[in-house]
Length: 255
Image (tube, rainbow, N blue to C red; front, side):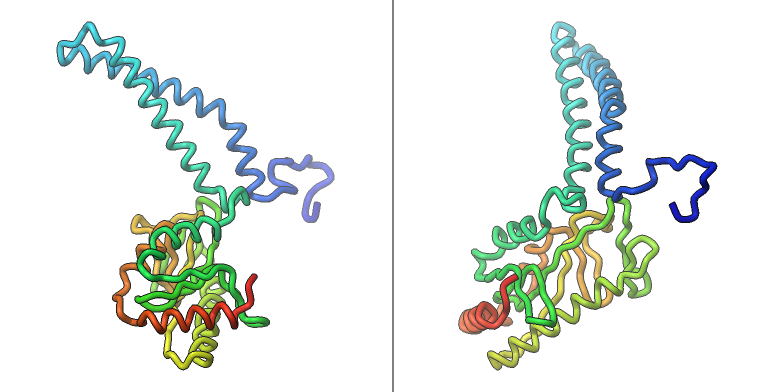
């Protein structure tokens, strides 16, 4: 190992595998600790349930209340940890982010007159995961994920992922939106401005779930449809939506 010592045995825990692999390994190894903690919490729930029954003069039902509270506490603790692990699925490669976002977009937008084209590219220039065209305008949506402890924030107009600048992520998406807009303007004669969105499947966003920085909007996948719906309607007519959609389907390469 470069920089290592032949006299000091290397700790295999920190060599040779991806962060995702180690995350899953540590998750499995910690299962016993989570169960032990869950038993303790369920025990507290058991006592609390019995105390509530006694407090309201329901002593005869105290065993039932105790078991009910213990079960609710245990189930809540299991659900909390399951959701935390499930939230990393895209980052770990267990699920595809574009599939999740596509489902959110179609469920929330298609009945409102929006068309969603998936996996489109301008040959040799740019590619995006989703192109959304509707009454409120046109959007490109890409998908990305970072490690669960990566804080995503905007400071003084700059995008940050942890302590790293986010310009290398923002700039290509802004350029892709501009390239798509230029193509659609040229081919249809309809003046459109395309708004770039980035669906974040893993990483620490603010409580609002949205960050605006360096020309793009980063947000949780479930908020993509809501944000697009919030745009003022009437920007594009039904005829313009149809023309733009047909042109995009014809001119843009499917990827």
